[in-house]
Image 1: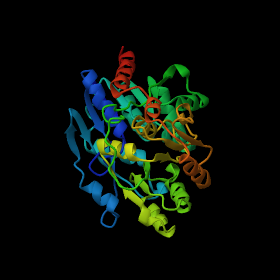
Image 2: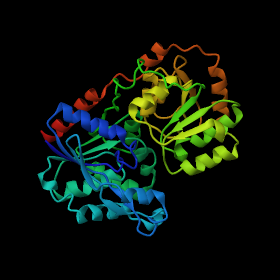
Image 3: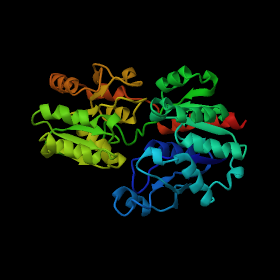
Image 4: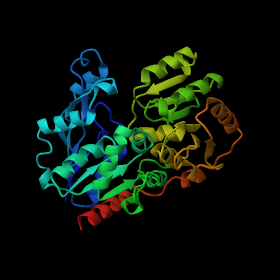
Length: 380
C-alpha cells in the first residue's frame, strides 16, 4: 500500500515536538500493515528575513529529504511572510512541491491523505483531484475551531471535504462541530489519538527536582493560555512553574514573567523527549492546561497516565475525563479561577492509581488499526 501524506506539522530538527502524534500514528501503522509512505511536510522560507530572523535561519539548515523508519520525508521550502495579507500560502506550497517534483509520482500512490483540514487538506485535494486518487482527511482541532471560521478558507476546506472519501475526527466534539457545518455523518469517523503506554505510566521515575513544581506543556501561543498561567502565578507566592514547549509567544511570555517579577521561579524548556516528559509529569504537583480551544489534547491523557492531577479549562471533550478524583475543570481561561484551583489543590488527597485509570486506554496500535480499517474501506 503506497500513501502520500501531507502534514504541515511534523517533527523535524527545528521543531522536534511538532506533530509528534502524527509521527507516532504513522510508525504504528507501519508496524501493523505493509505501507510505503511518503510525507510532504513544507517549511517556511523568507529570503528577505532569513538573515535577521532565527526562525527562518533554522529552517534553512534543515535537511530537505531523509528517511525515518521507512518513512520518506520531504521538507519543501515555500515562500512565507510574517503578515497573512502578503501570503497566498496554498499556492506557494504547491509551487514549491511542483518545483521539487515531489508529487510527480502521485499517480503511483494508492491513497492521498491530509493530516489536518488546513492547509494540508487543500494541498492534498489539489493533487488527489489532479491524479484522480482517493482522499482521506483528518481533523485535529484548530483546523475546525479556527480555520473553518474564516470564510475564504472555509469554502476551500468544504471543497476538499466534498471530494474526500472519509474524514477522521480525533474527538467527538470535532465530529459534532463538523456535523453542525453540514458535513454528512456517513463521511465522519471518530478515532482518538493513541497513548504510548510504555512511556507514559505510573512506573516512571519522577523528575528528581528538589522543589515542588507545577507543569504546563504545549505550543506557546495565545490560545493555549500560558499568559494566563503566568498571571496566576504572580499571585501564587513561592510556587514554581515549568513551561515545556515552543512557539511564537516564547519571547513575549518570558518578558511577561520578568514584568510580573516571577522569572526566577518560572522555567522555560523548549523540548523534552517523550521519556523525559513522562518524568516531569510524574513529579509535578499538577499539570495545568489553560487552552481556550481544544478537541482532546494528548497532554491531558499523558499526564493522567503518569498520575498527575490536572487543572484545565472546560473545552472540547476534556470534561469527559476530568472530575473531582483527578483534577479541576475551570469554566473559563481565567487567572483568578486558576489561583483558586491551585489553592484548593493542597486540600486534596489524590490517589495516583485512580488518576492513571482515568486516562484513555487506546494505545497507538489500536489507533493505527482503526486508521488502516478506514483506508481498506476506501480502497475497496
